[in-house]
Amino acid sequence: MIRLITKEEIWDELNTSIARMDVRPARLWDAIQIRPEKWQQEPWGRPGAGFWVVALIGSTVIWHNDIEGGVDLSRYDRYGVIKDYGCDQYTGYDLGPFWGPPKPIEFDPSY
Image (cartoon, rainbow, N blue to C red):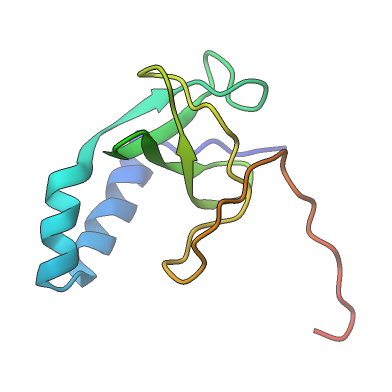
C-alpha cells in the first residue's frame, strides 16, 4: 500500500533541503518554487490523491513521487495536471528524461 506524504512532511523535506543549499542553488530555488500543491496525473495521481508539486520551471514541474518515494521532473501542458509520469527520482546527476509507468524494484541478492 502506498503511503501518501502529508503537507507537513513535504514542508519538512523542503526546509531541510533548502537549509543545505549553497547560495547559487538557493537563488534558483527562490525563482522556481511554489507553495506545495496537489496536482493530478492520470492514471497514477488521480483526484483526491495526486502528487505534491513544489516548483515550476518552464513547462516542467518538480514534484514528490509518493509511489517511489522521491522527487521527479515531469512536463505539464495545463496548470494542475502533470502530463508525464516520471519514474526515476531526480538526484541532480542524472538528467533524464525518464517517462513511463512506475518501475518495480528488482531484488539483487548480491547487494
